[in-house]
Length: 196
Image (cartoon, rainbow, N blue to C red; front, side):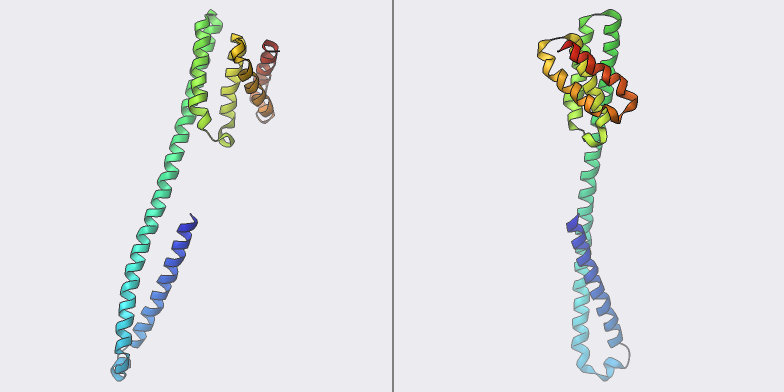
């Protein structure tokens, strides 16, 4: 971006120089001035050459500024699109995991619990890790909260450390989100009960 401003500044300076030269050339070529002073013919040719070269330089500089801005815009759009895709995918997978969780609560089939964990792990590993935490902290907390609870419900010693880390993460941020605080506190308490 800084390079773009430098190039733009140089282009404006060059453009002003050409404008001044053009105005000066117009004054010198006014009828009567050059006719009386033939010694200015070389000066007239020099200014015409400078204006021609200046026009070419401005055109080239303008084109490169256009390319620079275009590239930066494309990169920003690409980044925003990727982040939005990760956000949406994480949200969808989290809801699918929650659906499996509700099935598990209804049937107590451990396959449903494992599916809830697998799908929510996908949301975490493939998507939330690619999100800007400052912008999407709530979504990241929801994913970690659900995983911590699912891990604690499964009760596997393999999940102990991750469940505790996720529960601590959610607990640290629970005061920022009053609408989710009660649910997250329940998760933290359940994880601490399951993994003393």
